[in-house]
Length: 196
Image (cartoon, rainbow, N blue to C red; front, side, top):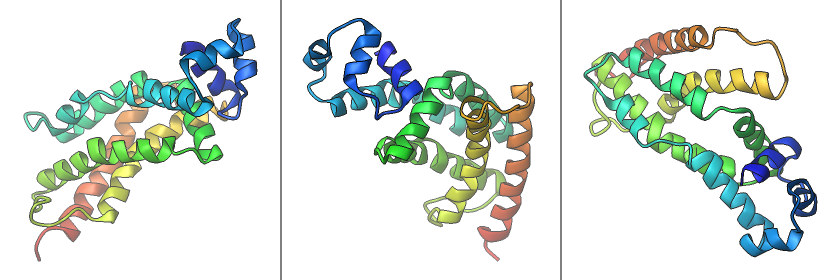
């Protein structure tokens, strides 16, 4: 799997299993012995790279009201950046999107359920706004929650796809991204969700 992940990160999901086998020093039939189709191999890469790196305790971290929401978000994105947003992850994610694979849609669904809706819930609590049981989550709230995530994600796109210069102090970048986005999210939530 490590070899397949490195291969697809380098050449994209359109890479041929014949070339993968050559790089791994095995035969192509051996790959098909374990993965009957290339799609089975891609599905396994998805499980390893995307689902396998997601930690259910991160949702608990976001929901831990014994700590300030800002601190929870900063801690989450520090861990997420280190454990998930690697060279391989970013490149496979981008290649999958360009190839029309459903990897991206599946991962976005996971993020919305396990991260974005919990963040919306916590932003509402911090803003003193009604909970999701009183006022359903809006698409605009989900979009606003994407702002923090997108900022951190795009930092690694610039780093691993474009090889562009990025802020050397990742912690400072994460703190700044959380502060700028959270302050705006709280203000807009108070304006739009609180009863008038």
